[in-house]
Length: 153
Image (cartoon, rainbow, N blue to C red; front, side):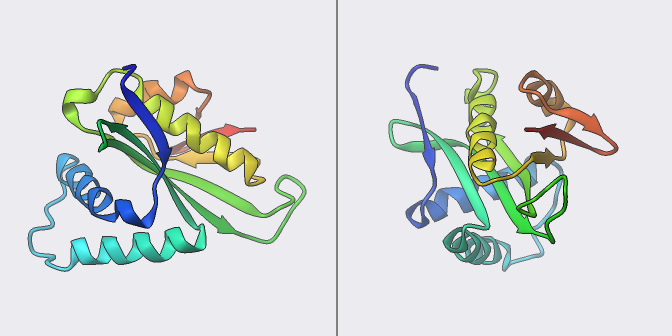
């Protein structure tokens, strides 16, 4: 889709991020109707983790409306030979609103996060792929590893 623009999310994007996270959970069969605080909990997590750089979200927009998201969580562990910086990257919450799917948006969002992970010193990124997403991730170099997919850099 040529009218799609991509960027990293800011705190000003928090409400659409919360809504799309809830849409993602609902679409994947999670009933959270009894958890009244979930939207507030998501909001608080995003604001705190984004401000620390531990959670980065790529967004896709059409006409200023966010229609797709993908997040990456960074955590640090003791450095080792295969990961000298000790930074791990985990991609999650890849979601595109139904009318905009199958147009390469999820692929573009994940590629933005892969570049971000590489620039952050990560040696790989992993993710848990739902059945509908495995083909997308495989096309951009992710390979199955146990119950996840990983791409080494």
